[in-house]
Length: 358
Image 1 (cartoon, rainbow, N blue to C red):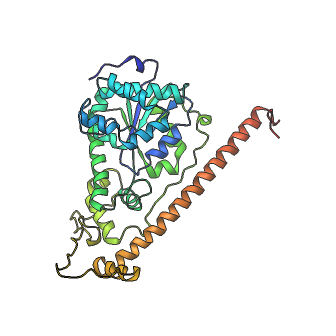
Image 2: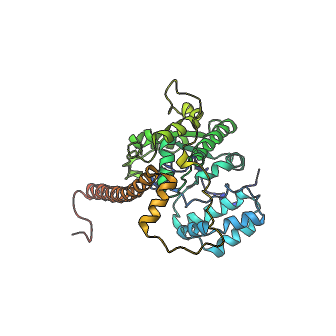
Image 3: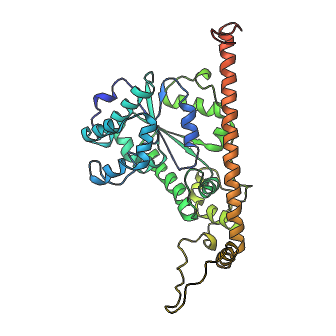
């Protein structure tokens, strides 16, 4: 347990969004950021590393390029963060100081800060102890879509099925432990239900936090579930493997049909971990001329098989389509939000244009 520093005074109890990566945590954060009293920085990862606070390993992790980039986005200077880190006696103190600085610089009117770092699930037990009044929000998504999204690699890329499944399995296991450690403090949302009915999901979340829900605080609530089931990212064998490896958690969260087999199939060959060892040429052999691309592709096809190459090509196409779809969705969201704001301004002025408006 840690002592709450003065920097935490004046704020409402915080909350933490946890879960598996590629499950909608960023979507949820962006929706909640619209509220005038809620503030959330980029991912902090302060409760992710296994190194104890105050050790060289922890300090090195905090000074990684990724977290430096996050602090740049948050508007927290490196000199200020260095002072926070040096002056803190625990992870909790560092979080309090960082959040106070972030709110002061980015959203001074906020009364409640929250953190969205999915990988902080690995420090959930300590989070619950360090922040005894904090609430937790867990958003869970079908592991098939999580694994497909990780393979596409829009934000982070995990091509190995075991690695992708482990992200999901470990997060749901740790969340069950957190629910036992902190009864009544965890709200669980299904990605598929939330994206289908975002208003109901936000209402439930605000009630969980003890805050009133006002529709005008969330002008952009347009969401749509994204499923990769029909995109061909995963083969039938890979789908069967993921379903079996994630079966206990899928049953727990309603993603498994009754009577599904419990036997784990063999790992599909094309996704087995490890690399093929390079073949060394005989010592006396002369270096061959550099082959053309067609010859290279032929050799690769002979090693991994034509189906794997086709899937790789398909993945590249899907990545491009996904980027285009995200751009269109973001443009549509902004257009709808702007139209709603114009309508609200018109209603407030009795239909008359505001000063400076054409």
